[in-house]
Image (cartoon, rainbow, N blue to C red; front, side, top):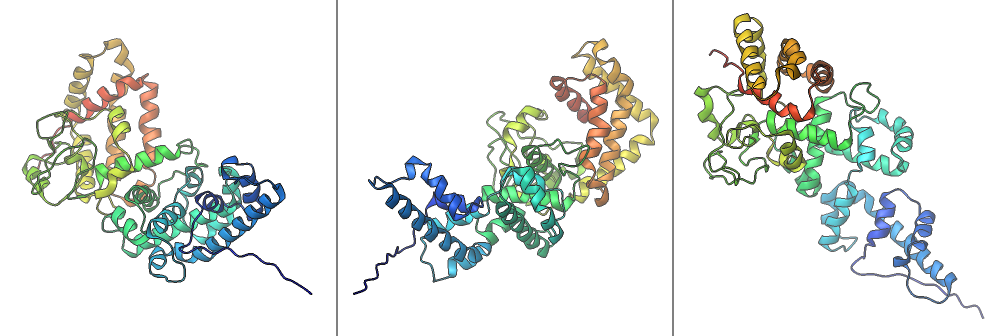
Length: 417
């Protein structure tokens, strides 16, 4: 008499093993996942027979992998995961799975950002996988996620609050959506930042997210709420900020808007985040302050992904004003150097004094080029070649940069109306 024995796993609601899910997302196959689990003592139940233990873990791993493969279609379109009835998954686990599925590995992201997210990039995934030291499957998943998010923003003509749009469409947290918003800005601007670029290739993943956040908070219109840098309080009807570091209202930088238009900063959409959020007690924030407080979450109120036209037009006109007025430029140079010589020894600033015109011209040229979208893609390269290297040649130390930039900004002459 024949007797057939079989075993079945049944869970209701479905249980998601976070460790196995992580291995699946990393691109490991079921065999590799089993070996990893066997090497992880915390994952082993107490059983006497090692063979039975291995068989139990194998069946559990295969069962979980089968579940994830069936769910991947829904994970690509998270709204479907919430509405489907085939798999009874608790909402909290749904959120966890979506958040992890759309997570971004900096090692992979660094090799994807800076390239057009087209099907052609698929051919380079083998190289990206090797460079990032991640599995091909993981690289492909992250590429496809970026392509879907970019397509969603492109369908909306890159308008609206990017962070909120991405969070609402893909049901991910604001923290993760903010990172995607920064990436979308870098891609939309088509900045030359790929690791193979001879000038900007040295920049890290963290550098790029920080750079994107700086530009988005300063140079793109902000909607209603302010960038969360100084933990200020805001009146519902104004865009003024008071901070715990200073009881005075943060002033509007004269560099960005003239006195006649300062009242416009109280509207619900302001042209530039720098008008309302980044000055403390009238002083420009130090680089260390920005590095500490400025992060992707600060772009939550950024409206669109295009630079504010008022800012770019002003910078274009400012260049024409200063370059064509030798007397004003000479007075500006003299005033800046007077400010710096009051802080440092004259001999320490000898090279800077000789090359200050070159630095100012570099800033003005870069600023004026921002009104042309084609020029924006070379922004980082221009900053490095036209400014960073000149400052290095002038033997300017990192500790001196705050004072140099503060002087250059503070004494910019007002453009005649």
